[in-house]
Length: 294
Image 1 (spheres, rainbow, N blue to C red):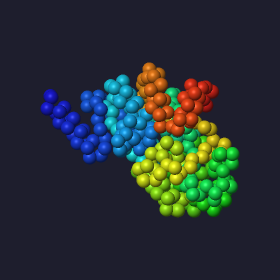
Image 2: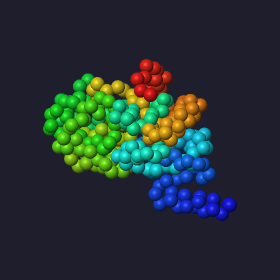
Image 3: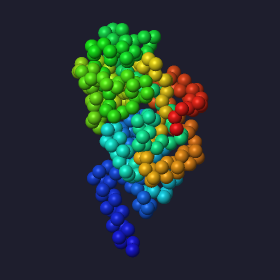
Image 4: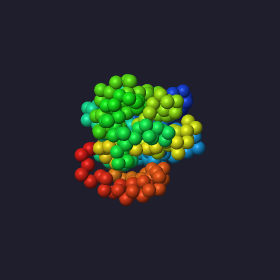
């Protein structure tokens, strides 16, 4: 009986090598597919800090404490990840923002990871031209979109939080450039450098990381919070809303309650600017109070 089991494991390993899906446990009964995006500093796919993102450290812990599943990891872009979460399979994503639309087909974890909210990045050389949209240190995204005088880049199928998502609804392609690729943010930053975009949406630590990968100096960029948007966002684990997905989420919630969050918070905070890092760590314990989300 050992030979077929060994052959089965080899087949799993070879499949992982071909498709980027790696088995953590070879003898579990059911396969749980973890969908990961390259989202520094949450998850990091390449470079000297590969695998050192905040959620990169969480996933092996979850896998070890959920031995009833065979865990595999699949690297996907956001559009492909959403497509898979809609499918009737046991698929989970550890870095999802809660939205009412996603709640129709995703079951979310009760516990969340807190991140500094998305905002807008502009070129420092464009600061004067975009000054009408910068109000008390924040970016007036709605006024920018209404002006139809410039373009902003965003990753397709990604949620940027309720305020930003609402403002982006119905915006035409002459103003909003959506990118579907695996390196969407890096490509958008290159488009911005070439003058094809005036602004790019994203998390500031994420933008700085990708800018460095693209050879863009961080000091050439300026980041602004979005006017009317909350300063922080909750990132949940989300699984396909199927009987298997709901059962897996029950177990995931149990495990999350047992895992100290301080290490994850410190890992993420280390990527923030010193002033913002101090504020983040001070605000973090209070952030979960009165939460309207799961």
